Image 1 (cartoon, helix red, strand yellow):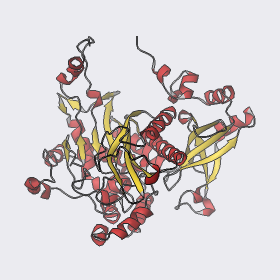
Image 2 (tube, helix red, strand yellow; image 1 turned 45 degrees about the vertical axis):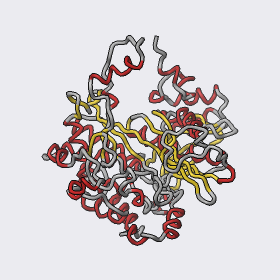
Image 3 (spheres, rainbow, N blue to C red; image 1 turned 90 degrees about the vertical axis):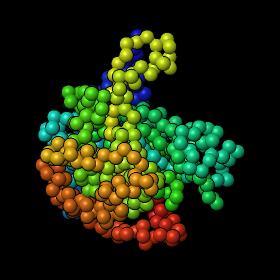
Image 4 (tube, rainbow, N blue to C red; image 1 turned 90 degrees about the horizontal axis):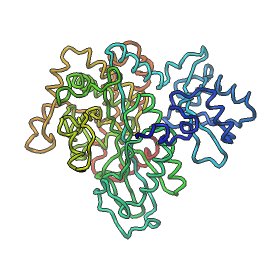
Length: 506
C-alpha cells in the first residue's frame, strides 16, 4: 500500500495540518502557531540586492496575529530598491500562507513566511520581480495553453581554513563529482541544508559534491550542488531563495564561508544555475512525442535560443559571470542546443524517451513485478548559461517570455533544426560547426546591448516594463566590464581582487 504524500512530507505544517501547503489558510497558520508554542513571526521578502530580508513580530495575542496575517505590514521601499524614491516609498508586504515554515535556526520558536509586495493602491507592485514573473507565466499560458514548470541546480563552494580541515583523505583537484566522504569534507553541511530546505517546502531531487575542489596556501575549497524537482515558477524561485539563505546560515554555524559566485578562480570549475524546464498541457508533460523530443519542446527551445543574449541580462548579472562562460569548462559560449550535449547552451538530458527505458528496473531487480509504465514525464530541457547572480524571478520570467516567443515565431522549427548540434563543438575537428554559431554575450555590457536588441519581445503584452528594461541596461552598463576578459588576461592579482569583490554579491 502506498503511503500518502502528507505522511512522508518533511514540512512540519503539512504534517500537523494534514493538508498540502497550497491549501494553507490564515486559520491554519493561527492554529499551528497556537498549538505548537510559536512565539515569533518573521515576514520574509526579497530586496533589490536579491537577498532575503526579515521583519520580526512578537506574537502578543490572537487578535494581533490575525491582523498581521490579514493586513500585512508597511515597509520602506526606497531602502529596499534603488529605483524607488524616498517621497513615494511606502510599500505593503503581504504573507503567502503556503510558504510558511518553522525557522530551524532560531532558539525562540519562530515561524517564517514569504511575502509579496503591493503598492499604495493595494495592487501587486508592477516593478516587483515576482509580479513580472507571475505576469510572464500567465501570458504564456493564455497565449499557448501550456504551463511552464522549472527547477534549478544550485551550485556553491564551501571555503574553509585549510588548517582546520582534516586532509588525511585528500580529494583529487577538479575531480570531486559525486565524491563521498571521507574524500569530501562538508557533505554533512549539505545534508543538513537539504533537510532544512525540505522542511521549508523545497522539493529537492538530490544533492551531491560537484567537480570543483582545490586548495591554496590558506584555504580548502569544495563545490557542492543541490538540485530541485520541477515545480511552478513561483515555487521554484521562492525555494531557491530560501535555500541560499539557509546554506549561508549553516555555513555561519560551521565557521566556514559559502559562496554562490559564478567564478572562484580562473582554471577551476565555476558555479552555475542550470535551469531545467518542461511544458504541461492539462497537467501532462508534452516534452516527448513518438519517443523523441516533441515539436512543442523544439518550438520552446527555439524561442529561448532566439533571445538568449537578452536572457543573460537577468541570469548573469556580475562581471565574474563571464569568467565562467568560457570553452572547455562545461559552460556554454555559443547559442545552440543538443541532446545529452554539455557543450550546448540548451541540453536535452538523458530522458527516459524509449519504451525500453521503462524496463531497466526489472533488469536490475529480477523480482520486480509491477506493470511497466512510461517515465517520459521526467524529460526536461536544460538552460545552462545562468548562474546564482541571477535575479531569480526575472530569470524565470525571461524564460517564459522566450518560450512564448518560440510559439509566435513562424520559423521556430527551422531555427531549432539549424541550431541543433550533435558533436562537441569545442573539439578542433568541429571548429567549422562552431564558427557557424552565434556567441553568447561575453560581458555584462554585451548582455545589456542584447537586451536592448530584444526589448520588444520582453515588453510585449506588458510583461516587462520599459522602465525595468532601462534600469537593467543602466545597471549592467554601469559595471564597466566591456572586453573585461581581454583586459584581465594574465593579470592574476587583478582577477583575484575582482573575484573577492563579488564573492558574496549573489
